[in-house]
Image (cartoon, helix red, strand yellow):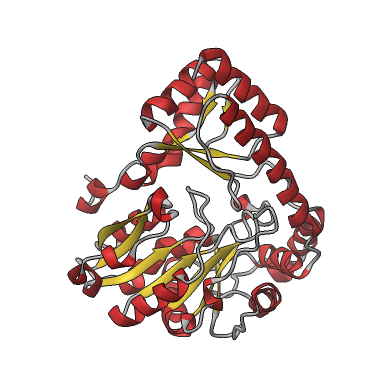
Length: 382
């Protein structure tokens, strides 16, 4: 019944977690969900108010621009210049997305031929792998190991694989490991991409969620990056807008054009009212982002301190709202957490073979609920 490629696709991790969570809720369990990274914080009021105003304007009720309205693309360019010092041509180097997942899912369709390799971090966001499989490409996993600070060792990639590769996905600050990039790595990645004629797609969705004075860079700040790369960004995590589906791809104009050509054939763009709300986010005050980071930092400190008290070895992340913790058996640990404590955590194997032996906690619940989760873990001896 299904196409052959469907047989290569694993069940989408977070959909499966939702099913297990729903079953427990039906059984009457008070589930604490520390699994999927969906912020519990509200979208800032000034963004909501702009959406309401724009939604009432009939001018916004028609098909939107495929590439994004000029005002949105200009706002993205201004934000990138203000935040990263990166210059972008709004007309050719910015493309509106229905969230960064939209761009990640479609970029292989533009550049990957059947049998070509895509270099995918492992562990990594599952859509890097599934988008490759939809394009009938071959996945080559780049292991992210603790001893390498969860940075791929590019020299380990076999030469024949590198020659046959079309795209390399990178993601810092990293989901799921919460790792940040190290000095010199982006420069090495640009050089590698030049040597092997590879497109780099940097997923930078978590750049604004950081702590302890850390400020994440853009890949496009790297010398020569625009020759080989684009960057996917999103308003989802920065402004608590996961359900709004608004993001952007920026960078090399030819790569942007290829992605845009795919998207003109598969969707009709982002609702103009949502784009107008996104403009108010990008050009508006940033204190809402700073406040969100303070909330997540308090939660991080609470969870990390509690896990250490329970005997676990866990690092305190400098960015993202995830805590990545080593365990003996990630599936057994996650299953026991749900069955015995009513707590959802994400097993690392769902992010690729490199995630085996880890679980991911999301800091998307209140300090009170995190403390309750820690108390339950202690009670059941997890």
